[in-house]
Image (cartoon, rainbow, N blue to C red; front, side, top):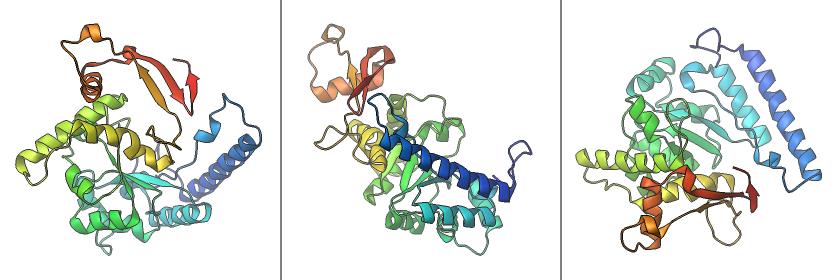
Length: 280
């Protein structure tokens, strides 16, 4: 952030550009070393650099131009916020009256890297903006709890799905109040149901669709993760599904739904990353 922020968080533009380049090179060098000396317990290569202009109102043209150049030169992913609330959308229009939309601002500075960009929220995108996101294969991070907590609005999730835009679920960390992905699946379902009340042309999502968004939907940004298909990394949770706690017999989908809605972290007995069990 190099504009419109409190002094404690404000960066000098030139310093921000220089430090970004230094951090990018640090991560590249670190991962090159880890590729040479790999161990089973070392997950450092999972940590990659993603360019993060906080969002348009707090990032100057000069900084966005530089970040776009760094993204292209190093083939780096980009993440930011887009069309989160109405005041933000109006503010971006004041700051960049020469550019037709919030999404186009990012695109103008090469910050919509094809298939390598994540934009959070996307509540108030116009149809033209949604088509641009589709064209650039931008990933949308749907953060329902953050949107509820900040009274930002409800993202038209079904509309994005109809356009085959890649979507994953996010907590937004500070805006959200929990990291547990089960809660974000439930939040996404609730949000889609409330949106459906006034927009019956957009049916709410199912539990299966919510589970997909929380796993393979967002996971596809990182490669072959988020699924048990052949050729995918084995990232998995082992869940204690005690039938004595159930009334009657449930099929697999119903058992999964039960865990999502009424389970707890204590029900998870094992965790695996890339086929390696990790300690709790």
